[in-house]
Length: 171
Image 1: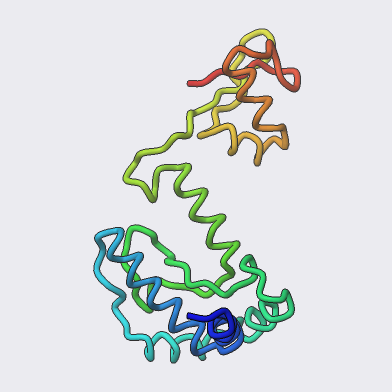
Image 2: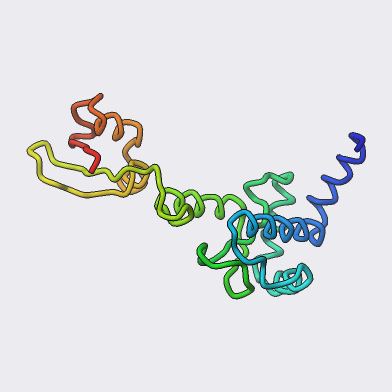
């Protein structure tokens, strides 16, 4: 494929909603196969009809176009329950970035990877050893407390004595 043809294809994919969502549908098929789940319970044309009924479609598409096709603003189809296959009752329209944030959180919690997670539970103690809180991960502790996750891990791993006036230990 020549550079010109590739650019034309990218332009069509990014600027024509029907072409864009046909590609999204193909990605859903590939994703379902990779996860060893049933294929989507709808056809591409049924997905397009469903999309036409979504009140936020126009705004999402306009934001994607205004962002000069920034992937973060790209419309995305998110499964409401990630353990179930794609069906018209188990999807919602969102942005790619929001979908990624949800997937990242679920990966951290072991929901998308069959209970396997690299996250280590983290406990927060007062300086005199009283348990304050337990978090699923240093990232969750960061989101809740506002403290830097790297510093929390450094304390839990013994590289720092304390962090933010507390002791931090892996559970």
